Image (tube, rainbow, N blue to C red; front, side, top):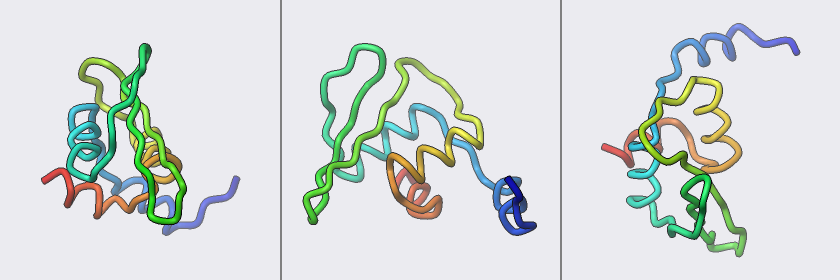
Length: 88
């Protein structure tokens, strides 16, 4: 896959987060904790009826930039700025 200079710069400049901040984001942003054995599972019903889900590993773990980017895009579906404003 070819990446543009802007994509590579964004990736290099991306912040990282950890499981503690991830869970804090979910609680502050109105996500609901559901049952989960291997991971904590949070769900959020959107006004249009869609249900978003995210998983958080038990215990403290720092996420890699790549994993954090995937969580933002595929699970939380929010911008990095929104995420960090919410966890402040």
